[in-house]
Image (cartoon, rainbow, N blue to C red):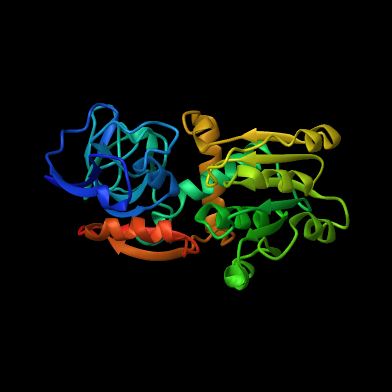
Length: 332
């Protein structure tokens, strides 16, 4: 028996409930994990509210990330042992699996050994944020030393991961935030420049920062009408990645900027490569190297218990956090 957080209808945080569920034994390519900590992601908020890339099959589970200990192995699993401390990476559909639970059966392709010298709290805050940023910035975008990266919604866990990865490869991370309240912390967490969009004109500030060249890359989870200003801030042959739709208004295509600058505008999610074993392992290796060197360090905003999962989602929707929200279970 395990407590499992599910929702039986879409809606606000209050639709999440804890159900006591009997667990089935893991199938051949699955493992059963005693979960210690769970990382919360904006994707789960959108899935719960019916605004995500896939429609929830009710009653639906939640959760892409966790840390825990393997309790049982499927018959085909040989790369792990019972008792191994492992992490769950986002490489599955929440209509099939979920991590908001005391125990969960999960696919072995979504399991990695927990990195050394990382706490259980930090371990729940690694893989979604760093893999998402790595896939666009490094694997596809080939971000390199000296290039300028614009990061809207920079105080999110993925935004902070992008700042750290940019610094790891020697690029120049420019954080964009709506209000000045988060400016000092973004600088503390590695942003070389911070643009406050409520008071600063993004294009003007980027021109000053880049000596008139414009940005080389944009990593944007917001979309909406602001995409035009981001495109205007780009330099020639820049890449503009859109990996979210936090602004639900229609997103125009910045045609004039694309034509005049040779701008590439690209939709992106990390699920492009999480089913590609070679690319996924390249990302895992990059992240493990960054964690070991100290370039990558998860930023924890706040922790909640699983019994308070509704409050955790309410806090995420308040947009007060800087970094990752982590939930602990009774196993921790």
